[in-house]
Structures are given as structure tokens and as C-alpha cells.
Image 1 (cartoon, rainbow, N blue to C red):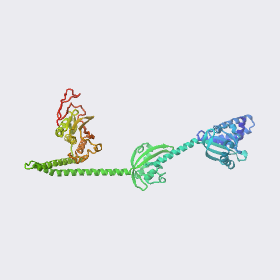
Image 2 (cartoon, helix red, strand yellow; image 1 turned 180 degrees about the vertical axis):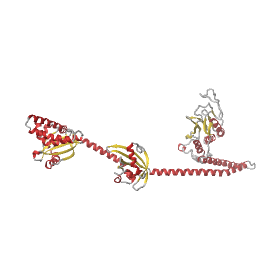
Image 3 (cartoon, rainbow, N blue to C red; image 1 turned 45 degrees about the vertical axis):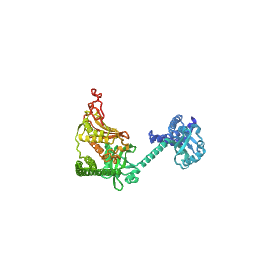
Image 4 (tube, rainbow, N blue to C red; image 1 turned 60 degrees about the vertical axis):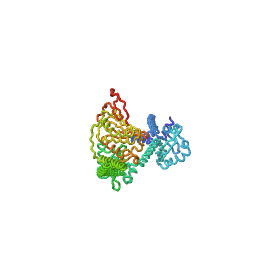
Length: 594
């Protein structure tokens, strides 16, 4: 202990000023002491060293020795590596942190040459030039490098060489204090921050949307390439200027007021939600923008990030679409009016043709061939008149000139009327016509009676026309959902390929049957769909090739979903039935009529 104290007595006057100063700097940076404390500690260290050498009184020396030990403790408490080097480039003092990092005992390193500690090559190439700057020129030298420290491995270190001029040495530099700080954590954090900033920059540069960042004064602090292309400005022309540069009036003049009110009240009028605004380019032209703003708070205060998207192309497309839609509506109205007019014009001569053909058919003087020709005239005329009537009907529906009378319609009565009209024709073609009324007796739907009958007759007529000989036509009904009643018409025909089903309800689309011997106009299903939708209903189809098709119509239930009375399943004749809801019903043995 006496040897170490003598060493400190010998060198403290030359080194403790610098070491205490560095220790105080470290503590001041950490916020634990002030710069006045640092200077006081340094002066006290010099005074203590002088007293130890010159005071003859033993008690005074003991007190000075105690003060010196306290200052030595202060140096050892510093988290940085500290060492004192003399002009012979030997260690005269090191602190405890230096010994831990270098994995050496303090008393074993005192007096040791630096080349023995760091190696001849590093000493010659890296240490000697710095020491010469300190000893010969009196300069403070600072650098940052990577050191391989035996006690802690490879570390990024900030090294500072402080020259010390001792008064006893005539003012020349007698010692150098070396302070080495491990900055590996700071370097890693800085590199991570740089990498994060690089990733963020790459992200901003690659975005197709413009990104503009402003501070709480409205000054632009970031302006990505997409924003540059959008507004026509370079970063130098925008950064540091008010963001109102990018706005037309009245927002150009009012923006700072908007921003200040937000800062004063905290009420977000723009932040957190997207909105459409107008931007102004460098050339003065304006264009529509979609803007989303978010606020963030950092060390520099509040900032606002705006993401902008040029929606000029979208707006132009929307205008073109609206114009095209309006043109289509006008064309549709013109077409409907034309068809309506033409249908009326065609119907008058067609009725005359049919009237004269009927007179000819009644003429007993006609031969067989002439009579056959008259029959063909009547057949073709009636078909053409039906087509004219359907075209007229379609044009009325499309133009909105069809008035509907919505009322409760009993399904059993409706099905009975339709079956009476279509059933005989089905039987003549060798088909079985079945009515399953179990789910619809007593059930009523809200519809226009005449129009729903027209729809059902069309579906039944198609089921008969497009069936196979010996096939079956079936009509059923029942609840499909609360408040919704479904009518279904099924056949056992050839079925409809799935890729053709979407065109079923398109006018004049007969799915390739135009050249067949089956009469039809291709308008009936289109009319049916429009009528059902006007009655707040839905219509659709399910079909399998080779097995047949099922068309369904859903309509509002007029009775609120109440259970209907028992009804029979019929094959062209009424018959009682037995169901759990009506156990007293006794089914009859229905016969099949063809």
C-alpha cells in the first residue's frame, strides 16, 4: 500500500487534474454532478498531492493522505479506462476499470512499457504517433477504433489522449492521461438506427403514394419521390417551406389557422380519417387528392404525416362511367319508346292479317293444300303477334310504365288456374303434370295477381316445351325463409349447361335453340325477372345436364309465416292428404292422366 501511495504522490500532481476532469465530465454527462464539482475535485486533488509532499506535520499528512485516497476512489469509480503514461512511454498509474478490461493486476502493470502491453506493431503504428502529438506538440488527440481487450473481447472504443504540463517540469508536457470509453453499445444503437432509417427511406422512396411530413409550424420536413412526381417540386424547393405551398385557395391561406386550432384544442378535423382534397402543382394546375393524416410526437415536438394519392385518373374514370351510364339510360329509354311505338304500329296490320286468314280458314271452297297454307299463316301470325306483345310488355317494364297492384294472392288458387291452362297441353305431349300443394294450401303471397300468373305460366310453358317425351312437370311451394315463400317449377328435360345459365334472363337469348322447332321469343324469362323484382321477389334456376331444371320464385309471405292448412299432392286432380299437421286427412289414390 505504501508503494502505491508513493506512486500516486509522485504522479498525482501531473495526472489527477486530467483524470479528475474526465471523471467529472463523465458524471456531468450522466447528470450526477456539475462542472463546478469537476473543477473543485481537480484543484483539491492537486492541493492534496502538494500537501502530502510538503507538510512536515504527521497529522496534516495523514489528513491529506485521507483526502488523496478519496480522490483515488473517485478516479477508480469512473466507468472509463484511465491510465497515466510518462515520457518513457511507461505506465505510472491505471484505474481499476483499466485493469478489469485488460485482465491485469494494477501493481503488475506500473512501470511496464506500452509495447509489452499492446504489442510492438500496435505500439509502433498506432500509439507512438498519438503520444508524440501530446508530448511534442501539446495537442489533445481523440479517435475511435476497435480494440481487442483481453478482459471483455473486441470492443468499439473512443480514446482521448490528454497532455499534462507539470509546473515542476518547466511547463512542458510531462505525462499523458489516456481515457478509453467503451462505446460498443452506442455504436450498435447508431448502426441499428442508420439501418432503420435506411429501411424507412427505401420504403418511402418505393411508395407509389406521396408522403409529406410537417412539423407543428406547418414546415415540410420530408417529401418523398412520389410526392415530388405528383407536385412537380424538387425536395430543395419544398423542404423548409410551409406546406400551404402545395394547396390552392382557400386552403392555402387558411391552413395555418387549421393547424393552430388543432394544436390549441386537440380536436382532430383531418387526422385519423381519409378525405378528398385539392392539390396544387408547381405549374399552378390543380388536381384531386385523397389525403390521410396522422399525428406523432417526438423529441422535436409534434409532427404530422400526410399520405396523398393522386385520384385524378379515378375521378376521370368515374365521370366517364357516369356519362356512359346516363347515355345507356337514355338509349334504353329511346329503345323502349321505339319498341313501344313500333309494337303498336305492327300490331294493327298483324291483327288485319290474322282476321283475313281466319276468314279464309272458314271458306269451304279451299282445297287441302290451300287450307294448310292458311293454317301456316295463322300459326306464324299468332307467333309474331305474341312476339310483338312481349316486346311491348318488356318496353313498358323497362320504361317504368307498368303499374302493379300488390295484394295477397292465394297460391292454391293461382296454381290451380295455371295448371288448368298448361296441364292439358302437357298431357297431350305425353308428360306427367304434378302439383304438390302441401306447402301452399292457405298460403298467400304479396304480389300483383295478373303479373305473378304471367310469370308462373311462362315457367310452366317452358317446362313443357323443353321437356322430353314421357317426362314430368312438377310445381311445388313452401316457406324457404322467414317471411319468404318459394314457388318451384321443375322439369325432366335436357338441362342447361352451367356456363349458359347466366344468360337465361337476358332478352332474346335462347341458348342456341333459335333454329330448333320449339317456338319461343327469348323474352319471357327476361320479363319474368323484371316483374318478380318489381314485386320485391327473386328468381333463379338450378339445373343439371341430362336431369332437368328447376326454376324458383321467392316472394314476400302475406301471412307472416303462419302454418298453412293441409293440402294434397295432385296429379291433375284434387285429392286429400295426410300430414302430422292434419291427421284426419285421408289420402286418395290419385290417377295419372296423360
